Structures are given as structure tokens and as C-alpha cells.
Image 1 (tube, rainbow, N blue to C red):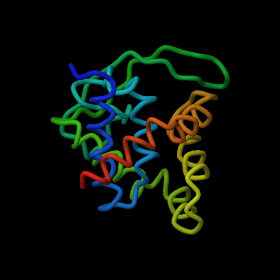
Image 2 (image 1 turned 180 degrees about the vertical axis):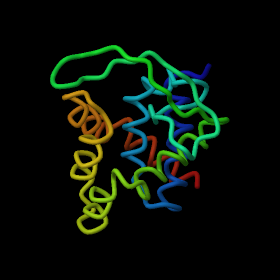
Image 3 (image 1 turned 90 degrees about the vertical axis):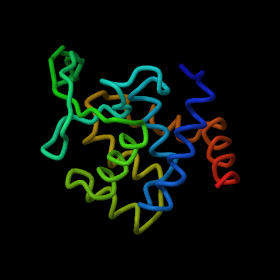
Image 4 (image 1 turned 120 degrees about the horizontal axis):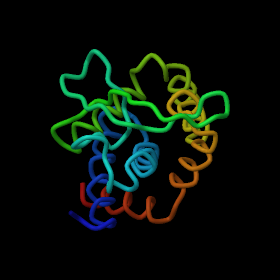
Length: 158
């Protein structure tokens, strides 16, 4: 398994390519990847690095015991999560979900109007996850120096 810097560099390269293709900000993709997979170290299934739950579009999935926060209480439940054949496929589905998925349409339209990354993260986070600290955590990671450096390096290499 690659080290953290290697995993970050790999996902940054994918995120930069997907930002050009879809508009999904690389910082958003990387930050949610970091939170959902513990910096790529613990994907859900083989390659679901975003905690994307199973939907009709997914041909593969895994059932995972996970924690959710409902009405302020943490519960443990078994849920079906999408699975992918590669990290790139997982990242592509995440970018599609954020830019095209119905649950995030309002947040995405807001981002297209104002290009405010923090507003996009907040708009996505309140639907994406049940943790009350999710927005703060994703926002903090999106603004970390190591994320900015990885993106800059990936852009220079592209």
C-alpha cells in the first residue's frame, strides 16, 4: 500500500483531471476523499473512497456496518455502499454525484454562481453526511497546505 503522500498525489492527479472535465473542485474531491477513506487508507469495499451509498446506477456494492448520527444520537447500522473497480472510477462517480446528482443540485448551482468553495462544501455536507462536524472537517482539509501543494504539483504535471 502506498504511503499517505503517494495516495494524496494519486488522488490529486485524478481530481485535477476531473476538475477540468466536470468542474468539481479538486479541493472538494480531495477533502471528502480524505474524510471518507481516512486519506485513502480505508475505502469502503475495494475502492469506494467517498462513502457513496448504493444507488440504481451501481453494478457492484458491499454491505458495511457503519455509524450514522440520527436526531443527535449515534446508531450503528448495516448499509449498502457502492463499490468500484478503481480509485479513478470512484472519483468519477463522486464528481458526477456532486455536479449532476439531484441531492446536490442546489449546492452545485450556488457554486456555479459564486465559485465559493466553502459554500459548496457546506451545501453538500448537510446532505452527504450525518456527522455534525462534517462541514467543519471537510472545509479544514480542503484548505490545508498539503492539499494545495498536491493540487499544484498535479497541475504542473498535467
